[in-house]
Amino acid sequence: SRVECRDGGENPPIPGLTSLLGPSGCSGTSTLEELHFRVEKTREQSSFCRFAGISAYKRICAPGELPGCSLLHTMASEDSSSSHLFVFTAAKAGMGKVDKEKVNQVIHDMSKGSKFMANAEDNDKKTQAQIAKMKERLGRCTVQEIETRRRLLDDQKVPELLGKADKVQLRASLLGGRIPPLMVVIDMDMFFAAVELRDAPELRDKPVAIGGMGMICTSNYVARQYGVRAAMPGFIGLKLCPELVFVKPNFEKYTAVAQLTRDVYREYDRNFSACSLDEAILNLADAVEQRLKQEGKLEPSRLDVKRTADLILNEIRMKITKVTDGLTCSAGLGPTTLVAKIASDYNKPDGQHVVLPEQDGNSRAAILSFLRPLVVRKICGIGKVTQRLLEKALDIHTVADLYDRRAEVSLAFGMERAVSKFLLRVSLGLGTEEEESKWLRKSLTDCGDSLYAVPGQVVNRKGISCERTFQAQYGFDELRETLRRICSSLGQSMHKESLCGRNVTLKLKTSDFHVRTRATMARKGVSTEDEIFTAAFPLLEKEYSEVGSVGVRLMGVRVSQFLNAFVPPDADQKTLHQMQFGREEKRNMCPVCGCWLQGSLEEFNQHLDECLESPQRPEDERDSPEPASTSAKQV
Image (tube, helix red, strand yellow):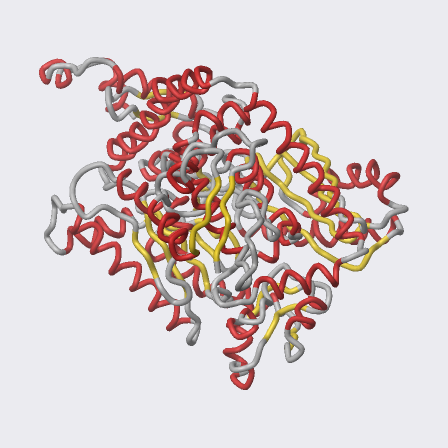
């Protein structure tokens, strides 16, 4: 078989294409083997070559057929497929050998004419329009403008981001005297299904889905071989796998098992964050440091830290398997939560992956070597829409492409927009700003400050929510009772975690799959069922006039903007810090100059930045008595 590779006259010369196909504008023929060799040879030179190589395989001529297709306009282009319309076509662990074309065809055939498909197509039209605008915007940019934006990023934005990240590491070291953060994400393998298979061993070799015909919560690895996965409607899963066995969810049982895993996490990090019943984030820095001290390694090398972290992580996984009677989990460890989350999916199921340098030096090199080859969809925070914008408008497929075309990303999205800043941080291998502030807040709390702590724990999450999917409801009384039940469940969860927030958001999904949200700011913090319901009910009244006739199939309530210190009604005992300073007086000691500061975290950060950036003071000046030292002794 032979293929013809022709660059049409309507298309401008594309960088990297010449090395693959020859001079721009000329045509010729090559065997598939020759093309394959040339694609592989130039794969690292241009992301377009990677796209061209994939497209070439789509067009294989029959013996004796005269080639007549353009490499740039193949019959089987991705645009002609509807797979991008469905979030549940993305691969999960255990779905590597799934026939994706068959799955996509089944999903498309069973969704045609539905309200869901109509909504998905409407959203896709908006995405296509956004892609066209981004292409037009970039088309107006000259080479000089792109180069100017690249220099601006390299001279200002990139050093600023890297500098902030380095300062966070230094602050943590000064405040706690500990090694840098060792973030861990632990994800239970097919958690709901694993619990049910543990209690019903006869189902282990059968395809099992937790949920019903309306929606699948999760599936076991046998079912995933057929393309059945979480977030997929049950009737589509049954079409893909007629032998599929449905098991009704039992969230009380799952919560009890999750509590066993959290008891294990607490042994290694008392301030761990539970993202959901089956996932948690830990920082093993303290645990690793203690283990190294026990081994007599007071000045451990990077290799010592990596080996010890790897051993402790495996130890945690073994304990979880033991306390849960055989359930397994996968884990990832890295300098940031972003890296740890991706690494947790690296050796699924029942595996772990550590992304840390083995030699002394900047850990960012290890992060980038891990991230750069990954496709952008692997990054948490990049969904199907952002993925299509990057691929179709900017020809960005990997994290390496994201950094190499940082100037184009900035011009297309806008340099000051949050998405542009997030993508730049990702391309540099940095965590989010929220993650860095959490680490500093944890360090402050461990030093004894109570400004950001509640009795027994640290508030280190952005929000807490509860939502339910159900058959379409049209009556106002029915929706009000649903809201009451959701607020009751959310209030119980907030009480268990001693949370109190001010921002209340109501989320509604109508029968035609349009999502509507309304938010309000409570004058005082809300934490109980009645307080949450009182804040959310007026939002439902305002929305009902527009959604009542359409019907509501999903409702959710979220509480965020947590107050700094919340004492539950039954926990009125004051802490020693409160008795000494009172509830309103909050003080932090600067680890650089030793002075005590009163005010917000932002003010403390500003003072700390000034101390870190100021010239180093001589030893005799640092040791001399000052008013700040006197204040510290009085405290």
